[in-house]
Each structure stands twice: as C-alpha cells, then as structure tokens.
Image 1 (spheres, rainbow, N blue to C red):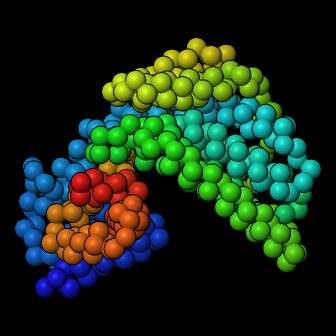
Image 2 (image 1 turned 180 degrees about the horizontal axis):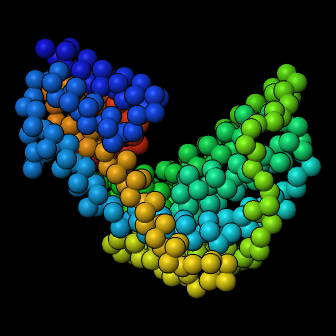
Length: 364
C-alpha cells in the first residue's frame, strides 16, 4: 500500500511538470494533481479538496490571508519603479560604471543590475522585461551568443537575492517568518557565506560558458520581434532618486528586523510606495493607473503561488508523504544536510519554492 501511495505523489508531480510544459495554468493543474494524490492514497475526496479544516482550499486560503498585503504592496512598488523609469536609470548607472566594450563586464553588469533590482523587491518578471531589451543591443554590438543572457539574469534573481542575503524582501524569505517564526535577517552569517559561494561559483560558471561559446564561434543571432530602444530614450529619474525607495526598503527591513518589529516588511513596503509616489510624480503620467495596474498584477501572482501551496498542503496530509519525509529526515549526518535535501525534494514534489517551505514548516 505504501508503494502505491508514494507512486501517487510521483504521478502527480509528473502530471504537474508535463501539464505546465504544455502551457496549462497551475490554477487548473494543481487541483487535478491534488485529486491524483488523494485518490491514490485512498483519502476522502471532498474533505481534502474543499474541506473547512485541512484541505487544498484551506491551504490556498490561508496563504492568501497571510500574504495578500505583501503581494499587493510589493507589486505596486514594482510598478512604480518600472513605470517611472527608475529601473532603467539604475541599469544605465551600473552599465556606465562597468563599461560596454568587453563581453564579460557586460554579463557582470547585467548580473549586478538584476541583483540590485530584485534585492530591492522588484518583481522577477519586471526585471526580465527591463533587462532583455536593454541587453539585446549590447549582445548584438559585441556579437556574443544571445542564449548567454539567461546566466546573469538567473544568477541575479534566482539565487542569493531570493533566499540568502539577510533582509531580502522576496516571498521565499517572507514565508518562513510566518511558519517558522524567524526574522527576515535570520542566520545572517550563514546567509552571507551562501551569498559569497553563490556569487563566486556563478561568476566562474558565467566566465566559463562565455569562453566556451566564443571558442565554438557562436555569435549573436537576430530574433524576430526585436525591441526598439526608443522607449529607453525618455527622461528618467536620477540614479539617487531611483535608488531611494529601494534603499529605504532595505534599511527599514534591516533595522526593523533587528528591533524585532512585527510585520516590518509591510511597513517598509508602504513607506517605499509613498516615497516612490512623491519622488517619481514627475515621471509618471497617472498615479491612479500605476496603483490599479500594480494591484491587478499582484492577484495572478498571489493565486498562482497559493495554488501550489494548496497542493503542498494536500501532500503533507496523505500517508505517502510520511514515507518520503521519514526517509529524507532519516538521512544520517548533520540535520542541516537532511533539511537541505528535504527542501529540494519538497520543492520538486510541490513544484514551488513556497510549497516546499510550507512542507518544511509542517515538519517542525
């Protein structure tokens, strides 16, 4: 029986991976995957899907209740930084400092831009939208392979600024504060060590891939639908004004976390939004439009994330999960090692970093 229950979880994972690769929305896929897990684990169907205690819907709803304010305020701040041209101004400043005449400094510059923007709380999607049209003419000018763009962007937005640097406002750093009772600045020494290791390895890997690409004679390939640079010629805020809301966000989070102020992330986001509204007024045609678009954009991100968390809740409730968790947590050696493995495995099981964090929280 235990084998069938574990196989059911694995089948659900395969289904999620295949369905999302076929462009099915996770809002549709996650409930179906939950049904697969429930049926193969011989659990009651409706109580575990729409039950009022522990179910897919209660997991989804609880996540929304806990993090709705963070998502909507973060999205509004991101919209202010995007629409005002502040993100572009920060990018231009970094590129001016590093130069644009050699390939590797360009990749490093793009990595730094991504890191600064994401550490400041800017949406990962917005960062990509800003970086791609900015990087394309530079890659074309230097005639380097366009597929290398993924390395600096992912290194900047998917590693240390997401989970390692103390006080990072990413949702992956915020979720544990609710489930594990930690602060946004928890384990700063370990976080800084992880940051250094991630950056060092990332830069080495990026340099190695660039050298291999050049050695193979790979060049820039023109793509259809290239972005025009006209939109980047508009007036943008100065670097100081552009970086001010981000700097305030980080400082407030660090100071507030040190003083153990509850919900400091919300305070920091609200202050940054107010400062952005005042500082970027000259560069924004309509404040109402920015607020509306920011709020609207947060809804889909919130529901996509919460749906994966709901799936994670179902996983933690079925018998098959206990077999998996007992095996992982029973790995001999340092508990930090088994916990790291558990985080990776649960991330694969739930298909979400947030879902993985929920699973870890349920084991405490």
